[in-house]
Structures are given as C-alpha cells and as structure tokens.
Length: 263
Image (cartoon, one colour):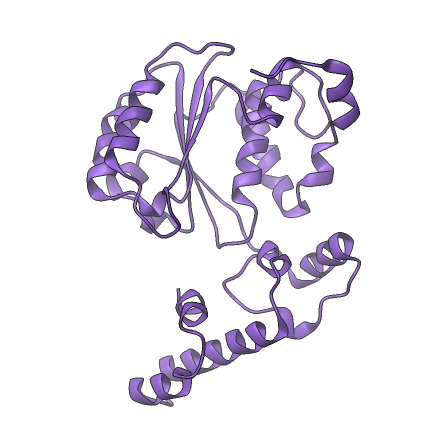
C-alpha cells in the first residue's frame, strides 16, 4: 500500500468543484442533506443517459461519506480522501463487466457479497458500487437481492445504470433513486468551452447523449450520422416511412454507431 504523504497530497489535491460539472450540484446537495440528516440509504440507484459523469458523481458521494473533515465541495487532506484519490480505499469496491458489453458474472457478485459482510477497516461502512448495472444477469441480480433486502448496518450498494428499467424490478423497488438530468444546451456549451477552449457548434447537439460524450473525440462526420439516424427514426415513428425504407437509408452507416444512437 502506498505510504500516505500529506505534503505531496496537499500539493496535488484540488477543489471538487474543479472536476465536477455544474449539473452535478443539485444531487450533491441532496446527497449532503441525506448525510446531515442521517438518512443515508442502504441501496442507491443513480441513473441518466451516457456522458453525464455518473461515475464521477458517485466518487463525490463516496468522498462525502468517508471524508474525515466532512467536505464535499472543497479539497481535503484526510487519510480517507487520500486513499480514495489513489483508488485504494479498503472499504470501497467497484465492479463492472470484465469486457465492454459483457454480463457481470455471478461469481463476481458472490465474491462482492461476501466482501460486504466483512467489518469495515477504516470507516463506518463498506460501499459496493455496481457500474454498468444494466449488465447484471437475472442470476447475478438475484444473488444480490438478499443483500439488498437484508442489508447489514455497515453495508451500502450503489447501482449505476442508464435507466431504472434496466435493473431487476425487485432490486429497483428497494433502491433510493436519483436521476441525473441532461443539462440545457447553453450550460453544455459553456462547460465544453471551459474544458476545450472551443465553442461547440450547434450541429454537435443531439438527443440521448450527455456532454462528456461530446469530449470523446466526436467527429463532425459521426455527429452528422447521428442526426441522420435520429431524423430517420423520427420519420419512422411518425409513420412517414416504413421499416424497409429506414433500413435502406441507414445501410451505409457505421453499424456500431447506428446501434449506439438507436439505443
């Protein structure tokens, strides 16, 4: 384990507000209120479209839980925050599919469930984060169900998924739900300009994608393809074209992009 070096940590630490986008602030304050009123849920489901920074927001939630100085919007030099920043905190476990698009294996869930039963090493609780929770199989989800239904006083499970419907209904019903909403265009544009020093063209805005997706090397060609797919689907839903015509119009587009935009 890396030795804690407070001077070095102070030098490299930064304000939470510098790394979290402005559309996280409302949920951060809601989370802080849950902590202050001691109403922290044993199971939490955070949902919202891709590209909103859900994993970063969960990291901020966890920091607020573990910070010894109870800070959430500012830098902290406590040992817990140091471990969290180094991604080596002994009471935090993140699980996700081993490969993109693959399922989360039941063996992974069983191992995580056993880990949750252990007593925390450096805090009041152990936190399991299930990233890409939509990839839980029925067997994997059911393996977690008992832990969710009968949580120990020292355990917490956080699910991250695009939509509540992607989670098993029995799990979903037992979770405290928080939705991360896609911000207004002007807020996205200001944030993009701040992070890239470039103004975002109007044609780069299209539905179903969060702002961070726009920072992941989206080329103009890809965005134009996205707009074309959305236009075709809109006409399909409106009954202006049939499925055969829609398929013909999209046959020359990159299949992976088309599937992503349809999703």
